[in-house]
Image (cartoon, rainbow, N blue to C red):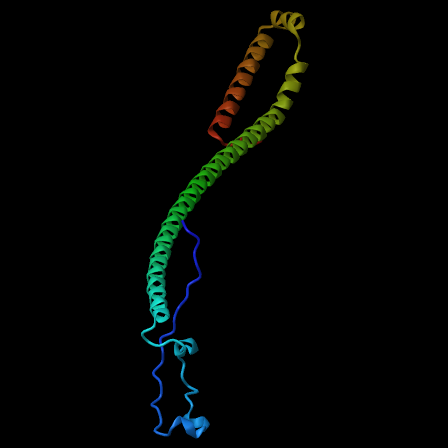
Length: 190
């Protein structure tokens, strides 16, 4: 593409004021055409001279080149407008993609947060269960071990029956506590 030449615009000649009937010999300033906006060089060449014809040729070619430049500018403007529209669409698509990514990250963060809350709740319930069972474990550790237990149980049938009842009761208590934990309700202290 050729470099753009600066635009030249020719002003349309304004209509000259009517000539006064006084002769130009009088020398008064009012007789002079001070308001004439025509080109002073036009007065040097007669209307039919070759120099004036060349100027007209240049002005015609200037008008044609101005028209071509304007159409080039319009095409460039249309091209720039198309490029801007394409860039706008690309930016919108990028923005939508980023928005979808952020929504996905937000959803992932929410699910991770919920998992952490669930883990904390499970840990708290497990710890609470441990505290509740501590007393039962301490008491069970005080029970007689196998050689002593055998002597007590074989000595009296009532002791053996009480020991079996204690084991059954302990199993039922542990089973009830596990059911409460699974259902999500906290066991109440009695």
